[in-house]
Length: 69
Image (cartoon, one colour):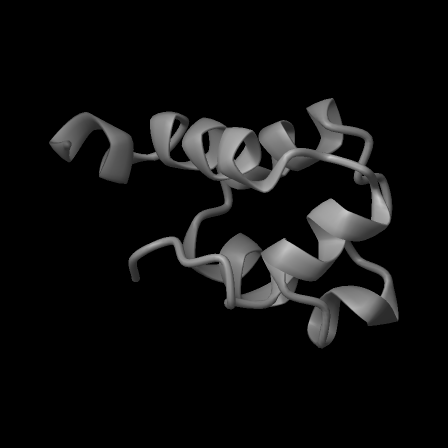
């Protein structure tokens, strides 16, 4: 599954478990909280004050998707 800003945190973690380290490194500590089931990557970046483009790049670079680009 391609990493997209409109996917939920739960979808991201399920499809790309390696992304947990990036999320935690950016201060997103409630990986398993109920909000992660409905909150998108874009929404989470806004809530945590993280630049969306930078976060998306980090997530992709940390996954096999980044290696393919």
